[in-house]
Length: 60
Image 1 (cartoon, rainbow, N blue to C red):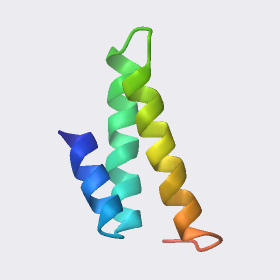
Image 2 (cartoon, one colour):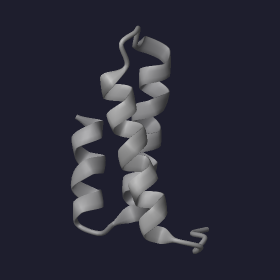
Image 3 (tube, helix red, strand yellow):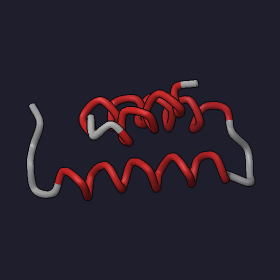
Image 4 (tube, helix red, strand yellow):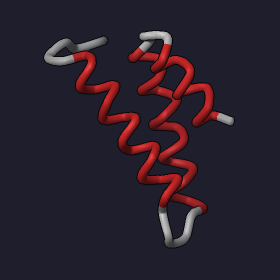
C-alpha cells in the first residue's frame, strides 16, 4: 500500500512526498523481505527516478 502511495505521488510530480513514502517502504522491506527482491528493486528504481527528477535541488 505504501509503495502504491509513493508511486502515485511520483506520477503526480510530488517527488518529495514520494521519496518519503518510498523510503518507508524500503525500511519495511529491509526488515521483512527475503530473496528474491523484485519488490525491493522496483522500489529502489522508483526512488532513483524521483531523485533524478529533483536534480540538484535540496528539500529541507
